[in-house]
Length: 128
Figure (cartoon, rainbow, N blue to C red):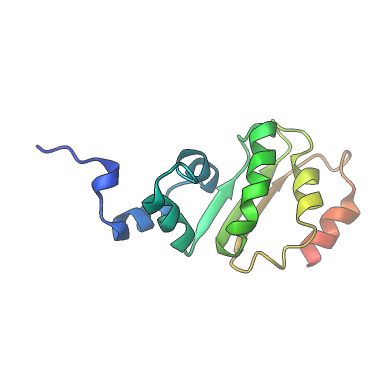
């Protein structure tokens, strides 16, 4: 049996894997701007991405907020949580006050304590 390297897969299969199975957070951490033009190109050409920030550390989260605008129109699923990173929902909504820019967004998951967040901020974002 011959072993294949991830890099040796054809672009079509890599694109399918990127769009369907890899969390956008992990994708950016592993491949984005890592001196591999092929993967950078595949990520940018992808049509659907999902980002799950639930297990994301605070420092990493801030870093990804800076990269997210490049991919914002391709995000179909988004998960944000206050569970392990207090302030994540507020930080996200401070950076993106409206969801209008998320043109492909189909699924949104918020996990937060409503006593620590201003409900008006969340309402404004959701109604957008």
